[in-house]
Image (cartoon, rainbow, N blue to C red):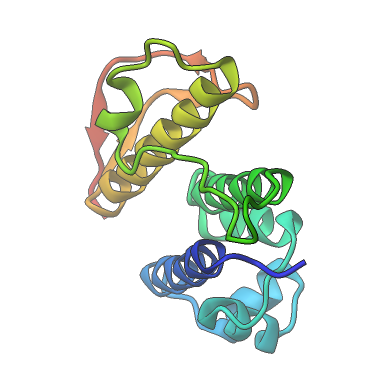
Length: 167
């Protein structure tokens, strides 16, 4: 089944994000490929949107680049939206309706009255994605959270401050 334009655009953006994170970490495509045990051409094609690897690739990139899971989270969000889009039958021969997810975190938490549980989960996934991106941005600036997150997403160790580290 063919991807929608939104899905293709999101996958290309995820590839560009991978390239940005790779460069910020001081890695070449070849160096990252060795770390994640994929070929350099796979990394290059993923960065340009010509190749769409599965979740293990993104998890390995997150680990190698120490991103805190932002690439995997975005992959999951794209996959979830694409799966939901495919599940909705097209009406009147036109394209299937989009999922209607809000574009920003403040839209995600505003006006949730009457939302189905599935819609609330979609909104919370968007919010988590934005939080993950903020953490990466703060990390690039030299600030590191002292709280760690376990696999369920809950704080495993909680300390309210952020510490600046010198490089």
